[in-house]
Image (cartoon, rainbow, N blue to C red; front, side, top):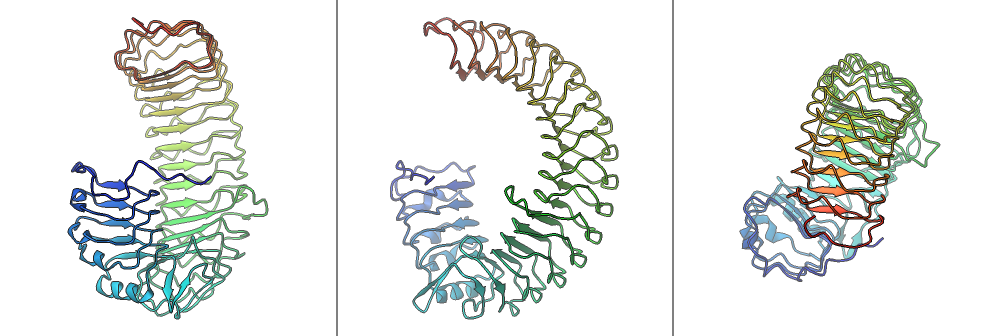
Length: 497
């Protein structure tokens, strides 16, 4: 759906009020701005996004020395020389403008410190985009980074061998890694929708720190990564619709001892393996696979984030040595019981939603837990939460709960979500003095009551119930929003309530 332009923004910035000094980010993208006047009022801004406007000139910019990151993509700019005066500028996005290649070369010569992102240029009167080849005829300056992804579809890489300082490359639709072996100083490589079937040609990229191979059409084996011993972040992921994407197993990562983040969603993985030597791994993201058992994680002592949601796991196990784990996602599996979490004493976020759990249990040791999500299970009774003194968010939406109980010890609870249950009476909330958000939609509630002690309540949602009267709200001084849609109200009278 096409986004509508914001008609509340004038076509210039000349009448803008002074921006608060503590405001550092400013976004005015997708408007109709065509000129920028009196920019002194933006002196506190460090990052500004003016993409998708009609800007043609950059007058008055020399005064804005505080700007560090500027996005001017999708405008009508032909001259970027006024930006040379911005001594603190570090990043510049100018995709889809009318800038001649000669001006870009001059700019880069004078400001080699700026990371420069452009997806097409004008050369010899022609506009270069939808590019399928990188070569010296198009790019002749010493670029530290090239982002040619969104507007491009590459068959091959050639002509970049002389760019010794190239640190980043972002490409879409690459069919082969041939020609990339000379980019030995490359630190970041991002390839979207690649059509390669094997990972090869990366052996010389020994300085690579970030490797993203997102949505490749088909990769059957992890290989030729053993020399990337500086790699810290590796993403390999497929399409949800692409049933042909099959990765046989996790392998070839043994030498990546510095790896901190590993993401492999939609890879048809059946087993967690090959991770034993990744002792520095902090984040492991493996949702949307076919994993049936939690195993192979015992050596990951640094792991802080683990996501194995949307798999085929039937039992919680194999986590007892992950003492530093902070976030755990086991949602959308086939779990029936909460167990074997007693060693995860640093856990703060636990997602167990969309399983087949019938009882709240096995959580007593999680005294640092702040967020517990058990939405869409088969729970009937709220119980065994007494030890969760730090809990701030509890989500029990879409279960089989009939009575609100067992919450009296959750003195720090701020958000309670109990939508889509079988609750007929609002009760059991007296001790929740910190509660700010309460959702009780789609239950069997007939009367607004039991809320008088919730002095800090800000949002109350009671839609899709059987309430006939608005009442008992007078003791909620901070209440900002209330939803009562789809009830049986006979009149609208909130006076003294």
